[in-house]
Amino acid sequence: MIDIKNLNLKQIRDGLQNKSFKAIELTETYLNEIDKAKALNAFITVTPDKAISMAKESDNRISKNESRNLEGIPLSIKDLYCTKNVRTTAGSKILKNFIPTYESTITNNLWSDGCVMLGKLNNDEFAMGSSNETSYFGPSINPWKRKNDDMPLVPGGSSGGSAVAVSGSLSAATTATDTGGSIRQPASFTGTVGMKATYGRCSRWGVVAFASSLDQAGPITKTVVDSAIMLKSMAGYDVKDSTSIDLSVPDYETNINKNIKGKRIGIPGEYKIKGLDADIEKNWEDGISWLKSEGAEIIDISLPHTKYALPAYYIIAPAEASSNLARYDGVRYGERVHRKDLDEMYSDSRSDGFGEEVRRRILMGTYVLSAGYYDAYYLKAQKTRKLISNDFDNAFNTVDAIMTPTTPTTAFNIGKKFDDPVTMYLNDMLTVPVNMAGLPAISIPSGLDKDGLPMGLQLIGKRFGEDDLFSIGSVIEDCRGTFPNPAQWWIEK
Ligand code: GLN
Image (cartoon, rainbow, N blue to C red; front, side, top):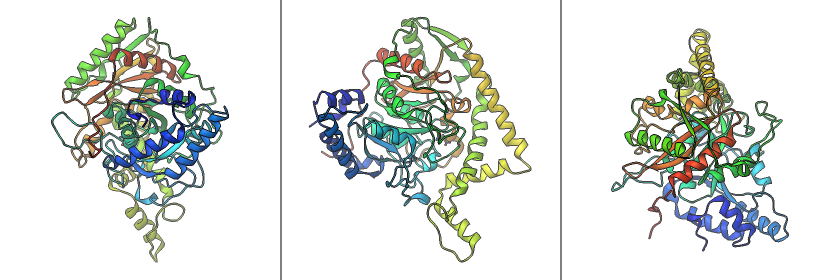
């Protein structure tokens, strides 16, 4: 039996190459763990047949010394990435039987590097949410629990399943997407590493669109090195995405440089928000002393428009979503409710197929784009977005990276914020500004709070400054020390 709980992606890559184990054994072990973890509801679709045939091909290549970069490594994919001939739902009822005839560029990159697909992961419907509770397939459950408290906790969202699968050791790494925080916030809630790349670094082609000017992909992994390995394979220019950037992808893994002497780290005063947990604030201070002790220079900075990021996001993201979701009309994609009248068919298909949060966003989006309100809301939000982006540009004249907490609180109980959208939206206060500016950012597990729940520190980088984030992130990881795995309560004894 392979002890996958204590293996990260790099160790798996090495183990496969040294022939310590075979891809098929590894894949079967993961499939078995996935089967035992139904209580976590991390997967919408498991693809055992595909996994086994891909693993066999990998073993074959390894034995002939024809390994590709990530040969035989089992992964799972957020169900927002289209996978050819494998159901892709985006967590929505309207796509519950959608089988794409094409493969997203990112997953194609991963398969071309030899990865093995275990299945498709749960997420908030169309990636709208911060708790995975808007998924049509039910919430995914956080592997972590509070000390002496059995209440199930949310894993964060929208990439909840992606975070749960890594935290619960059901996959060494997963893909995720981040429009306002959906990689970093669930990573922070589950003690995993979540990296959102620079806008344009990874192709969005074949990834179900939420808000196209904000959406960006990235991996969730156990370690920073694993994140670097994954991003190298996922990233790259793609002619099929006009917003992807034609810039060569660095070898992030070998570029990791733990000598951060003289690196200038910015601490934005505006991120000390009301409602920041005391333990999280303390953890931020720990992070500052770790980096200082490694020779970094800590510089207080100001990002004055921070408080406008969230309200502006909740105009821009729904506006773009309302346009992107217009394609689900019961005709070209997705489920149809049959009606004699055409208009009724459209409206009943959409009201039956979309959940409440998605409908709320469509309503907000069409409202802010409507002729009478466009200037007052949408245009204003776009101008605000520019100011937020300028704040970061100014800061990066004096610092190399910015460090903040990832989230104001740790994981909360299932149901606690579900009926209060505004409270739910506040989860993304510290992550949303990064998307507005298109910058890269990573969340690194940085400690446990008084209840024993994971906390995360966020590092924000310059455009295409992922290398710096991996380097500084590795230092945080070293200073922090070994991070525990959650107790496997979901496995019945
Ligand atoms: N929670 C935010 C929202 O609901 C961000 C989601 C995301 O990044 N996909 O819009």
